[in-house]
Amino acid sequence: MNLTLIGTGYVGLVTGTCFAEVGHRVICVDNDAAKVKTLQAGGIPIYEPGLEELVRKNTAAGRLSFTTSTAEGVGNSDIIFIAVPTPPQDDGSVDLSFIEKVAREIAGAMTIYKIVVDKSTVPVKTGDKVAETIKRYCKAKVEFDVVSNPEFLREGFAVEDLMKPDRIVIGVKSQRPVPALKEVYAPFKAPLIVTDINSAELIKHASNSFLALKISYINAISVLCEATGANVQEVAHGMGMDDRIGKRFLNASLGFGGSCFPKDLSAFIKIAEQVGYDFGLLKEVQKINSEQMNRFIKKIVETLWVLKDKKIGVLGLAFKQNTDDVRMSPAIELCHRLQKEGATLNVYDPKAMDKARAVLNNVTFVQDMNAVAEGCDAIVIATEWEEFKKLDLEKVRKSLTHPIMFDGRNLFDPAEMERLGFIYKSVGR
Ligand code: UGA
Image: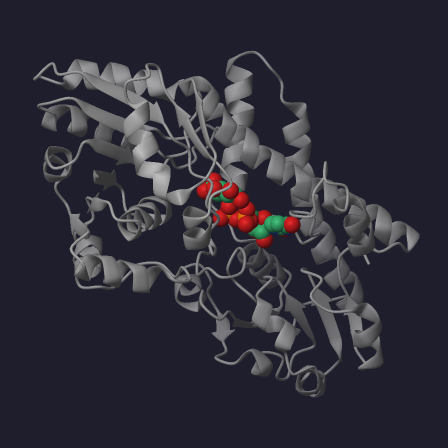
């Protein structure tokens, strides 16, 4: 099929590429000319495992192309996917101006029936507004359908999630666009749910908020574990064996971050407020999340006492593993908070150092994870990179002036760390 994706961020670029990989002909549109040039030359602006090879392969096969022209994308495709950012605003709501602008541009370029699909995370009822806007700005007065098709990919696993989705959600007002969308998604062999637009939009916010809730729940349990000598990983394991609860997203940590959960929680609380419901449960999820970071910092301060003139090594800057994304990263917040207490920092991340340079000042970027502890009073693990589990612990212990490790991701076994001579403090154990 001929498909167009407008916006080549995480969602647009990975979705467009995976659509091309299964055989569709895809045009990716972005108004950032420099980004389009990079993509046309075979480079990609983000780190995402497996993506670069797929972009190259499908561009070379002529199934994937990049342009700055919305008119070109709309003119050459039957289905137009909107995948532009919906950034947070100060009051917790999201800025929908990119969606509105793209809707106007699509309307202006339409001369025959088109299916306009929203993939961006948007508040419920945005589909109605998109339809109104297209109707108003489409001079050709052609027929069209607006569809909500939320995306559930995780950064760091985006290609995998896209190629093997748990479910595809399609929100429609009429049945007319359904066969075409079924054809788009047929190669992915995933269950496809057809529902109304408002429900589809709500599924996205409800899912992300529920996952954030799950993390805050286990983080709250981690507090009880610390107070009673229990082990949060054992508790999570025992809970997760119940199919109704499930094992995933029960890793206690120094808190969740990223460009989705914090933003989507605030937006969902705001959406609820606008329809007259006080979503106190989600406010508590936010509160537990910020307290979790406070508690972790407190642990560091209580152990090291005064941080002024202390040097700390920080492993991990990305908001999670397998990504170079540092937006709303708990690791970056941790660095800022430690600096505020007067500590100087050595930092290392396998992929996110370049992006971190824009948000971290006066830190030493170290090129080797085993060298980050050199001359430090303590070392902190802030991101759950797999490779950190392979740290040369003997070397790290020897290069620390005091063998102290704070592990915000529970990567090591406390008994083993003690045996190796570390003062080891993790989360909920
Ligand atoms: C999240 C959702 O998982 C995706 O389904 C959704 O499509 C995406 O938001 C989005 O709306 O675009 P993402 O933010 O990429 O994906 O990353 P997650 O894997 O969900 O992790 C979010 C944060 O929670 C990270 O900081 C991670 O370290 C933390 N986390 C995750 C925990 O602290 N504990 C866990 O058990 C799991």
